[in-house]
Image (cartoon, rainbow, N blue to C red; front, side):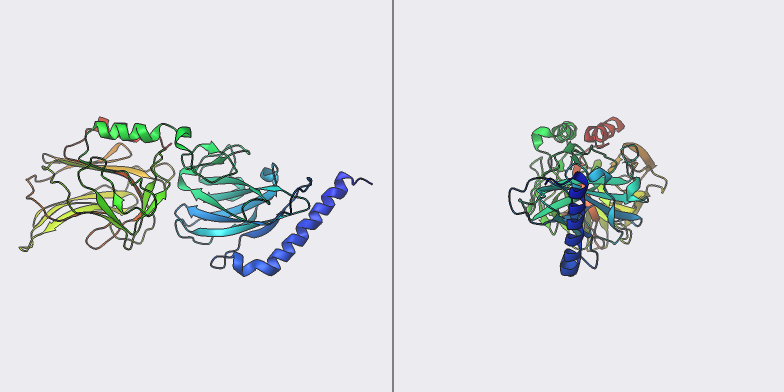
Length: 421
C-alpha cells in the first residue's frame, strides 16, 4: 500500500524529532564553542536512499570583525526548500576574527541524501529581515551538503559579502560574485571580475617605489615587493583572508599583538612621499594602531622619519619627524567612511614641498602645510602593522609606497579600479 504525501511528511517530521532529541542529548558539549551551540537539525526529504546517510557538521567561520549588535541565525531544510524554513539558533556571542563562530550539525531525516543550510549574519537588525530587497548590513551564506560525502564542511562568512544577496541556488563568494552552493572555495581566477590585474596595472602605472600585495599563501615567510626593491618578512601575520578588491591575491590580517611585516632594507625616499593602503580596523581598544612606521631615533634624541596610524575608525594620522620636532596631521572625525561602516577603507597620505594631503576613499579629508626639509639617511627598518609601542589589528591590502606625490586623479583611479562596491 502506497503512503499518501501527508503520511510521508508525518514520518519525516517524526524522524526529525528523533534526530533532534538524540543529537541534543549526546552532543551538546562537543558541538559547542565557548558555550555557544548553534543547533542540531534534521533535514526533511523523501527520496530513494542509495547509500547509508551520515550527519554533516558545518563549521561556521567568521571572517567578519565582531560588532555589538551582530547576530547569526541558521536555517536547515531539504535541498531546494531552505528559503522558507524557520530561522533557528540565533546567537550574538562574541567571536574572534577568522575563528569558528559555532557549528551546525545536520542530521538526515528519512531517506535523505542532501540538505541545504542557510546562515544569516545581521548587524543592527533581525536576521529574518535580511531580504533580496533589503540586504544592507547582512551576510547571507548558503551551502548544500550531501550525507554520503564529507562529514565536516566549512562555511566562511566574509566581510566582502555584506549587502550581497544571491538567488536561492547560489551563495556569495570572496569576490562578491554569486557561485556554487556545493563548495566554499573562492572564485577561480578565470571566473573573477577583472579587479586583480586591473588594480595592479593602475597602481604600477603610477610608479610605486615599493608595492606589497600581501597575496602570498598561508605560511609564507616573505612579503614580496612587486617592484623587487625590498622584500619583507612576515612575523605572526595571517595570510589568505578576503581582500579589499575583487582579486585573487587575498589580504593580510594583523592580530594587534605581535603580527608585523619587517622590511630591513627599504630604499631612502627623497623627501616627497605617498603612502597608500586598503585597511580595515577590528577593535576599538588600541591606541593609534600603526599602519606603517619608519622612525630613526638618534643617540642625540633627534627623530627622523614618518608614521601612518589610525587614531580611530574615523581618522587617519600622518606624522612627519624632523629632528626633535614632530608634526602631527590628523584627519577630523567627520571624515568620510565606506558606506557599510566596517569594510575596507582606502587611505592615501601625501607629503610634498611643504604640503600634506590625506585622502579617504578618494576624497580629500585634510590639507595642511608643514615645515619641509630633507631627511638624512636612515638605517632602521620599515615596520608594517606595528610601531614603537602599538600594533595594528585588522586587515591590510595593497600597500604601496611612492617616492613622489600622487595627484588626486591618480588616487581616485586607484579607488575606482578596486571595484569593491
